[in-house]
Length: 256
Length: 256
Image (tube, rainbow over all chains, first blue to last red; front, side):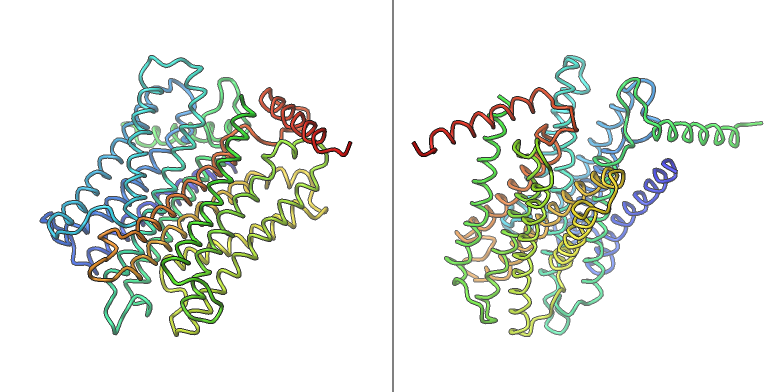
């Protein structure tokens, strides 16, 4: 039953994450004119898509690496490398997303970083950079003692969750701001809830749902790498069902 | 040392919480014309003050009742009643805050609940109501078994933290939206960062800082009511210093 819940959560998470990216892309493509890299508003359109992809979906997926039953046994190093590499990918996508909005502002002579959305967003990205470098230095490089790692691990997990929460707050304020900017038409303003407003508001609610599910799996579920020699009943069930599935898959796809 | 950190965190938390309420009140009083209860924009001005006070500051304080060392020993019931009562007060303040914005919208013929800020805000208040009633039914009324309470306690704590995170996201998008509404003056727009914009953006950052500190004490610190018969060294230190302080206070203020 525990393994059923785990795999169902993974499916829901994958679907929600894909929908967050697809909905944001569709919003920009269908209602805001599509994409370009030329300093116009079409360059800005990359910003919401890349921030949702990098700071929310990829970041969330990267955070959950140690929740996969396959990561609970055997050497931890490959999973650490995967955790760091996925976060680095998320950070790279985020930086391209920031470049898109800075490029648009430069081209259109718009002031940088004046709104509360931008203050919170840039603070969140700076915290992400600090978290990545500290995590790399303490948990991946070999110099740090086990004592230091045990001391910093809960702080690392807590700040990881905080950065995701702040990303969600930034995305919500960003979507809200964008809709007030573009839906000014007197006959179909934002307050009359035209199709674009309902679609973009729903995208925001999807992002919140994805983030809450990531935080639940990260902080509140029992799906985590156990302390050495201390597997719980639930974790044993999850591992057994994971390896059964793995064996069945290999048997099906092995060359005869 | 642990007790020093605890009491310092309480002082920082109290100062940050007071500053959140005072800054929001000052913003509305000094730049937005003050307060009234007459359906005009002066009635709306109660909305940010009461939402920050109810959904962030009072809610955060109410969440931390079980982190006070005095609550770790003796009967738990009085602390449960205090936890529920403070949350009920937070909810009441929130409902008055919502009444202020609905009253203003009715009077000024503005559509209700169209922005993403309002969708997220009303969802958060609805979740808060559900959380309060479920918490009251399961943890305060005597019918629920110990097994059910142990099962639901981590879910209750997790959703409590989620509601605070969603409140912060709602406050950030609300401040951002309000500033775009009111700072439209061509000579001093929001993008030129006039005094009001810097002050209100800083208020948003204060709210985020307060929320993160509450979440840290709630989720990541060792300051919590221990399982029966299992006090950690840090918790023993905190309890000892708490009772020393209590004794010293009584000795100083006792009538001769």
